[in-house]
Image (cartoon, rainbow, N blue to C red; front, side, top):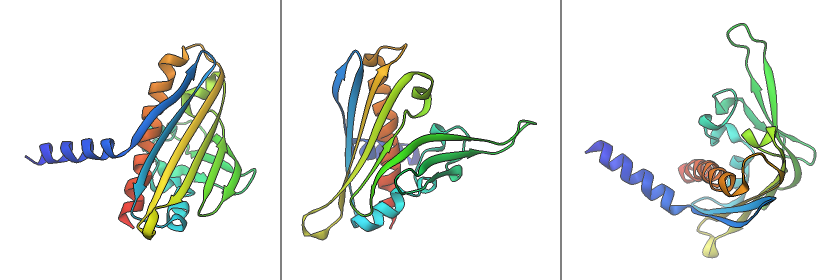
Length: 179
C-alpha cells in the first residue's frame, strides 16, 4: 500500500509540471517547463541559486548535489566540485555561466548541460519567476534552448533533455513547497 501511495504521489508530481518541447529542428530545440509553487519569488530565487538544495544527484558528475553551486552574478559559474576518489585527484565541472541575474525575477545561464557538453552545442537556460495573482505563490518557467551540431539527432535528444530538465524543476518545486 505504501508503494502504491508513493507511486501515486510521484505521478501526481510529474503531472503537475507542464513540460513541452516547444520547438524542434535539425539544428536545435527549445523545451519549456513550468510549475506553480507555494513560495514568494524572493524565496524561490534564493533556492534557485542554491542547486545543492534541489538538483538531482542522478544528473551530475560527482553523485552529490551538495557539490553544486551557482555564483549568481553575470559571469558567475554554475559549477560542481568533483571530490578526489579511488586515487583520482579532485576535479570540477562548469555546467553553465550566468549571463543574467535579477533576484526574485529571473536567472539566465549559458551552457550545454551534461552529455550535451561533448557535442558541438550551446544552450541558454532561463528561469522566470512570476508571482501568482493574489500573492499565493510563484510560477516558475524554465526554458532551455539548445542549438548547434550533435551526433545524435535533435529529435532524439530533445525529449530526453526535456525529461531531465523537468526532473530538475520538480526538485526546485519540492524544495520551494517545503518552505
